[in-house]
Length: 382
Image (tube, rainbow, N blue to C red; front, side, top):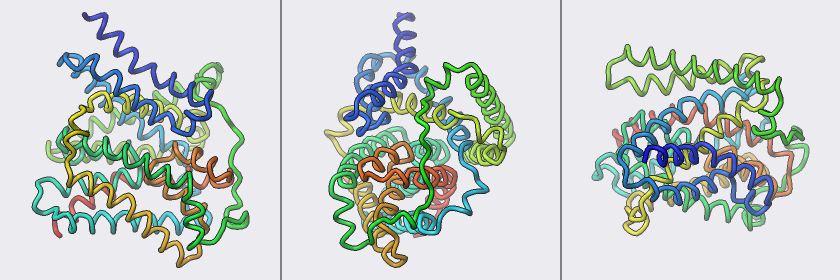
């Protein structure tokens, strides 16, 4: 029995490597993305350990380890000093996208009568977090806001389903549709060229020098998380998780300003690997009744926020004549998170927008926790 549980746990840790390999090998899976593929793996694995409360506890521990370690690793590769040098058009597109999300969440809260639903302000805060940063921020805000497990799983599940429709629109006819309003992309708008590096975490770990550097960066990350955890324990219980998540976010931003850490290849990939493990764990906890018995308030709220924010973003971008590719990649980076940036850029046949898109996504990772928490507080006043 113990051997079976350890084998299952082993699968949770190793399956992201299989997902990465399959996405690199097969183009159609690459379009789907490793995050979605890991979500599918989790749905398959879930019933295998569902009957064991002890195994559930092991998964909780694994999940609580992955997110705190992933946040700094995801931020390390972003040069904070360079954020101010981000090209003008992507910078305005980022501001408009975040503004569109905030407005959509506030409007949706009022439309769906959020004040009458207990904890709906927390849902709004989590939506700002996930649609400005992605899954890591959603996971962080679950802890910060002390969101009910069933509500969290519903948000995560609905987001995956609605996000798939959203991606299909952007990758199929979104560019042609939005070109009716926005100007076409020109190279002068985004002079930054994407890197030609195709190194994956797996290949980097094969090299002795890169493996040593990655182990060092991981050790630094563990120390940062440990220090944040120590400070957390000194705080009142009600503020502990808020302090913890905000501290590891700040440590991640600080680490990104140090050249030795920032230039270490694979730190972002390592962080994403942890997020892939987290995705498998989370999806394995999804129950079918989350879909057969849909919570209409949360489902419609998420649908409203995703598509209203996209429409608002497009019209706001029109004011600055931001090109269609920049708007699409910015929206992708925030609504779907950075891993989807290369996928969408490929569908647009525009590799020049990959680097700005990733940079925008990393900024979203950094500020998503703060914006989500503040939004939750603001919604309680509406």
